[in-house]
Amino acid sequence: MTKTWRWFGPGDKVTLDMMRQIGVEGVVTALHDIPSGEVWPIHRISAAKELIESHGMEWSVVESLPVSEQIKYAGPERDNLIDNYIQSLENLGRCGIKTVCYNFMPVIDWVRTELEHPMPDGTFSLYFNYAKFAFFDIYILEREGAREDFPPEVLAKADELAGTMTESDRQQLIDTIITKTQGFINGPLGSAQGSPVERFRALMKPYEGVSKEQLRENLKYFLEAIMPVCDKWCIDMCIHPDDPPMPVFGMPRICCDAADIRWILDAVPNPHNGLTFCAGSLSSGAHNNVEAMAREFAPRTRFVHLRSCNLLPGGDFVEAPHTAGRVDLVELIRIFSDCPDSLPMRVDHGKTMLGDQAVGYNPGYGFHGRMLALGQVEGMMAAVKREKQLNK
Ligand code: DNO
Image (cartoon, rainbow, N blue to C red; front, side, top):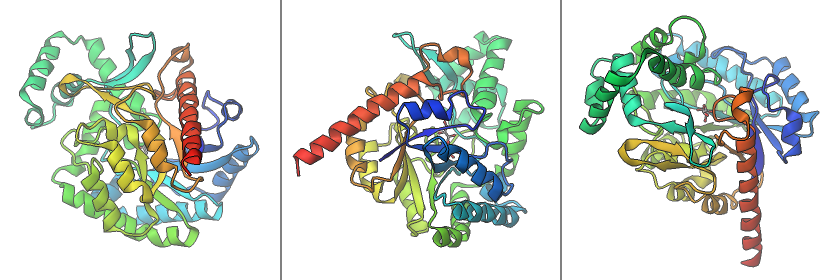
């Protein structure tokens, strides 16, 4: 696997020089300032590529080329937006960039309720508190029918929170779920204008009545439309699993488990219809046997995210240190080391530690925690390589 690192562009406080010094080979980035739905022009792609190459690395993966909401819910502008997407792929292909990560999650991408959950060792981790999530859905979003989506014990805790959360706690939760986690990923919720809750409600509206089957069909329609340009330029599209892998806020999600992934890969059996194997997202669902999924889907995996969560009582989960999560990352490295060496891999969501909190990194994308994780993963990779040599 190639060691890559997510970089948010020239404004990222982790610079290309820093990345190069810690052994990063490939950069994972996007043209974050171009609004979703607009074409990525060749001159912008090649300028970013040259900048990365001038620092001795390559632009390995685009994460993400965002899929517009209208493509997901089949709105009236769908075909025009797909044409723009195809044009962006054409331009990426011309510039020699061949791996594109995207997701098909309606409205909201990854969901966490705490960005700096204190751990006993003094570091901070990303955390998902199921009761706080239910509280947000029921009491802040005030979504009709929300109560029906939660088990009684979670409802009881959410109701309790309704009595204890102060106005500032509520604001902080809104800031976490909507503003901070969505703000840096080019998603539809990212805009800083207007009330985030109102924006969220408005964006959810077109999904009323959209079933899981319909969303799947819309993904198939999109993939079928873009495969010719992927064939032309040898571009691998890699869908990112839903994070967490379950439906949220009453909207369907279609990339949550092995059956979903099988469906997606079978629906469009082109090898360019590939997967981002995000071990972390998959690990936050108790239903997922992540090692077995890696074995099954390695042949169609085009990009790997290495991290792992730990599941906690009551439906909570926490992002674990890379050596101590529920997923055996050593085993995943064994599995993916049978893939071509060029397979890009990045560590994801490190701990916040050693002063990272004061720098203002994007949540989950601090420097020290990810550097530690990369070092750990590098060690695992070296051990697996040696193991394979000895077993030859
Ligand atoms: C969060 C990320 C996601 C991911 C997108 C890919 O930290 O894992 O935002 O980049 O879902 O499209």
